[in-house]
Length: 129
Image (cartoon, rainbow, N blue to C red; front, top):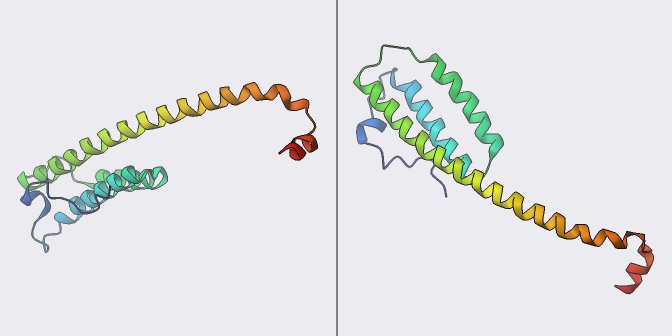
């Protein structure tokens, strides 16, 4: 599922603003990174996700503290909504990985029973096949 620029579920004032107002830029970039994170999660791209998280962390650290007005609070709320959705996707992904590891472990255990025949000559096995 691709969620690249899908901001339809956010309030309109959370994703719009005066393009000439420079205070929008950091929040807009963080929102874009957050959307890209969701895309990386949905695509199972852990490396990209980690890279985006590092970039986003630097952006968040550069935001001024305690000077947020209503617009900034609205933007932060939109980002938080996306973060909650990303967290839910990550938890789902984690559960899928746990299931996959369980399947692999059972497969490994099942193959372990075939090790008893390791002493058979490989050439004989090839001829028999």
